[in-house]
Image (cartoon, rainbow, N blue to C red; front, side, top):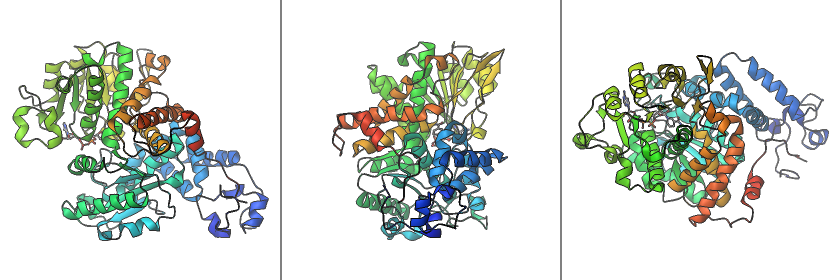
Length: 547
Ligand code: NAD
């Protein structure tokens, strides 16, 4: 694609361009034509040899944060090699480029900062957002992941430091779904932070003011979305890790203006729904038999509930009947109608008409749930008493401790299996190692959104989706649940192996694209062969000839 391109940088400038740099792999012809002979060692080696070298460097790093810093350094110098490495070791490296290590990296962003990556749009840039977009070196952008840093994983307000999340998620789009990295743009809206510790840190690189809540915030978001939609009308905008006060209303405001979605709600909803469908393949029970208790009543809880409600509607239940299957518990106890006056808008549709209950244990005792989902961001709240109470009433308790990073999980995999005598069907947000109990090995699943969003994004891009609907996530979830082989279900794993994620993303993309065409929301013609169309779209991490 780049051959005969007279605008290619030359010499040191070429070597310093991570998108074009091949390190020592430039051919003799490229060295001559592009003025780099003598600037790199004479022997040209292949990408496979480079891979072995950098994988060795990576493996030599002792801490996960060191590994993260190493990988970011590689991405900054040679993007092709970075993705070549990442795609070959995605299972191993996913917890480094994404949760849990990315959480630590965000907390330390200002201290491990080396080179800028992504676009930072701050409150001071109001009125100039389009100019900032024009500064980005690539001008065919198809996917943006944007955060305002307010609710980073379960770690709270990290302000500008949250930029690591869009960077990580977009690298997963590339590694899992083969999206060309040049089509992606990570963005952080820096609107201040209420994190005192950060504001008092002399090395914090973001705006040192409190978080903007008023009209100036809305104006900045609106200017950003409008500028993106004007410049790149079909660009997917993925809202990521916004706080409750903004996430729900921003999705409602923008979802019909273009291809816009919120991964914390819709992506999480789909992946957890798929996990539940996988668990039901093990228990043999139906979706309508479920009594589902959530710890946490925020974006993830609402997103997951809505996804399951869509599934229950498929089974013939009315909306009201479906909502009867859910009990949401927040920091003040069970969400009930007598709390209606003080309940946040997003919790109201789930307020139950029953007696209050102050604790999770009380709720579990009363409801005897078949499924218990932790999305509170608070560690350890699935206590032994709670899990044992649940296990006393159901044969195969479905327990998802989804809070991220690992340090925030409501319980560990080992606790879930131990306290249920190995009967739990367990999944978590961040990965846990296999557990051996009474001579049997259990392999916990990871309800990672990376199973969903890359496939949805790819399906949307291939079809040129004008909107992103809940039904697209619904078909993606069902497709994902179907990809889990019986052999894995037998050891309690309800998600496919991470190593299969590329294949899974292709499958999901085809299903999502078909849904886009079914809904008549496409802007590209319907291909004769969807799979071939997707295959042709994807980017491979390999060097292209520059001469
Ligand atoms: P959120 O801030 O929107 O919601 C958190 C909820 O937890 C709020 O309703 C809050 O009231 C409640 N809460 C806080 N303390 C509590 C307590 N002591 N007891 C009961 N409830 C309490 O956040 P979110 O977007 O819903 O995310 C929550 C967690 O889920 C995060 O840790 C996030 O990383 C994780 N998550 C995991 C996945 C995944 O595994 N795929 C996806 C999305 C989010």
